[in-house]
Image (cartoon, rainbow, N blue to C red; front, side):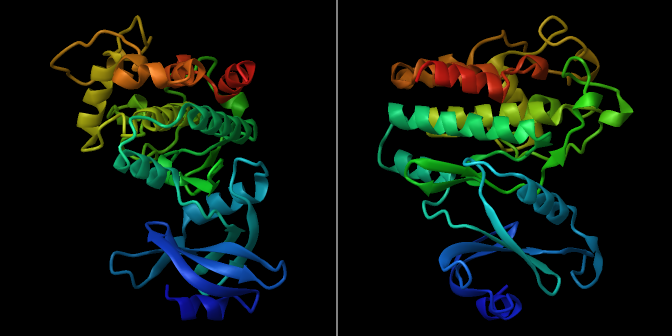
Length: 324
């Protein structure tokens, strides 16, 4: 949407000053809240699904419903703050706190461009602590994000992160979860496989015939990938295709077996090589000595092929705080 169209539909509550960026989610503008007298970010999202010709509306977009519900509920220093929702003509406008520092993806790229091998020790610890604390809170609200990646982590400033973009989020009925978080045939435990961006998508979503999965464990894997990326200043897992991504995960962490992941056999693809189990820490290479031990332990704990043994965010919070 162009600036003039957005301004017209904001009912005089906000004055658009500039466009910040665009993406698959829509367009984001910088604006001044006339009531609060402060700068906010206005995220514009199409309210309705469109047919193939982009001419007819086919229903309310489910991501709009999910993000609206999530942002209204969540109140935490590590989650972007929702200030207001304005309903326009087929468009939803989210007024959110302004985060001027770009996103974590931009920061990683900038550090690599400047020749750094890894994030500075203090920054790694600070950002890891903030991320695990934010995700622990989100999960405590019985909510799974399901699309954690560097571009969905905003920088409020040089020292403060905000988790954003809850369009893929789902509520989780914890009473319905299996006793062990693993591949399941439970018909009440089905979620779409079409979540988590490739490269941050866990192995259980990459296996073609998986029926059920724990969305909280999806977040744990994705966050582990983000932490590893902060350490290495490059993505951990390739994102060329689902099959290549799955093969790369097996190469990095070992090919799962009934011993390491009970119940996995029916879902395993045919593989050309069996890789032994290993730790993510061996892939940190020359920067290993520059990584805080607790940060490395959190990354290693979350990046487990078997979802049932992945470290929970709350456990990660306790580990990080014990070493403060």
